[in-house]
Image 1 (cartoon, rainbow, N blue to C red):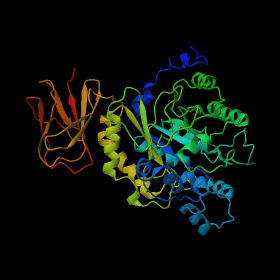
Image 2: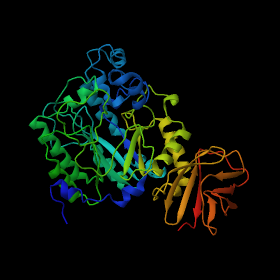
Image 3: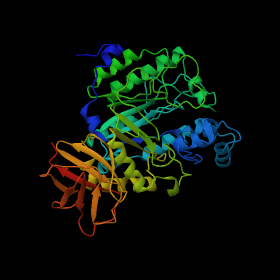
Image 4: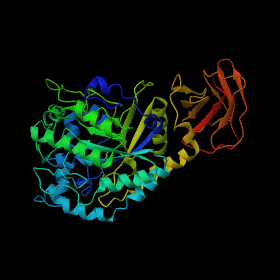
Length: 463
């Protein structure tokens, strides 16, 4: 039955099983900002806000995709880099021909092969970031800047490649901010909401863009960012989407500008979206199992867009990445892990190594992550203090050890299993010896257990 353009009707939409089961998606921030590919590396978003506040964040923004806004701080590090590299008279829009030339070398199938190989189930591409430049040759061009789109249909080419490799394709669109329409510098969190474009021309423009993306590409995720104009009819837009994409999902970043202004310390993305299928913490997570589906988005480093200023020391360590992923999945979340390609589509080697290492771990332990759901609790510890994360499917319970035990016999505190249950270690043949010691479970591990970021135990036989 078609959805009606009302929130009452929209709220009957059920999150499709593919999204619940997917667990791992790849986010891609790619655009004009990929040409300079530079930002200061002051730290992750949440850390920087806690230590220096929002004003420090915007002036020294770690997000390279915010290059145009950060460039407007005359005494900031991005302006200094830009002047030294390109000259003070070089305008941001002068990157357009360079980007259009660079992307002619890109092979979307290589991306899709890599993402499928590491186990990703879906991909989300930035079709238009806050600078307003679009990655498809839209029929609704920007009225403020001529030819402000790619000559090559990057959105279409990647969509086809991703689907040819049996993954879902989602599309990101900056629905609230567009610096082609509003050039005001954002220097505090209050400015974010004050600079959301509310002009009727932009309302019509942004809605038409979303409908064009829906009609041309049928995105499985409608991934908006930083609010939406108050004048837009979201009930009609969301119904249009659900009625055109049967298995689609909508994120929580469509809040329309509230009355009054946000107060100091309030989050960049407000949670009061009138309708959504999942919530999207950024560079952060939840401490407990959530009833509503959620998705953490973050870069492999401090930035989403490519940042040539980031070395290995700014990127997630492999242990940290795998532990974070297991923790997110145990609490009903997905990880949307970002890749920041260079302008020509090359994925930096240090980012690619992290992806491939995650994929190698998932080759062995993916059964404990994909197509699972949270158990009655997410966390536990061994008697030696090693953290554990639980997941479940059918009558199987998975206990993922976040590290390699130093002992050959581990005791999982507070875990009781049926007497006829079997215990296996993923990646090893045969079953493991175990015994119940009161409310604790004692398991004998295989000899010469290789060092790994995490190991997953499979306990079969739960009711």
